[in-house]
Amino acid sequence: MRQLFHPGEVVLTNDARTAISDAGDEPDELVRRHTEGDWGCVSGPEAAQNEYGLLFGRQIVSFYRLRNGHSVGVITDGNRATTTLVAPATAGQGGAA
Image (cartoon, rainbow, N blue to C red; front, side, top):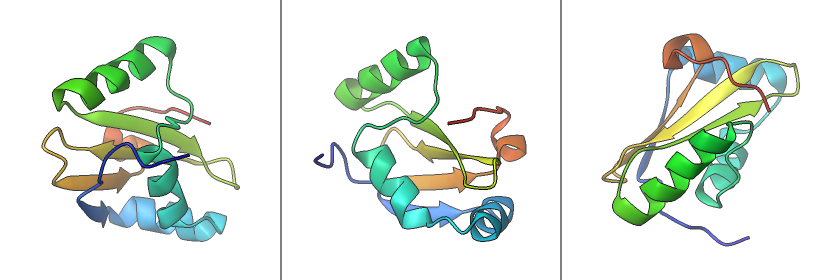
């Protein structure tokens, strides 16, 4: 797949960094999936919001299940300056992919 948008600066919260490291996953792989339009396990309406966000410069949110069953959110600001990887408790959501 091709990259649909540039993620800007990639930032990991401490909780996300720990969750990803403990699972043996790679942050770069999650960001790649996110920027290529693989939103992970978001609902249909959330996926539609992401498609709208692509067109109109709004926030884009993905959730992925890690190898150990934990989840991480990937959130890109509408201005595409920053993409933040967060643990679900930090994101306020508990998605799973």
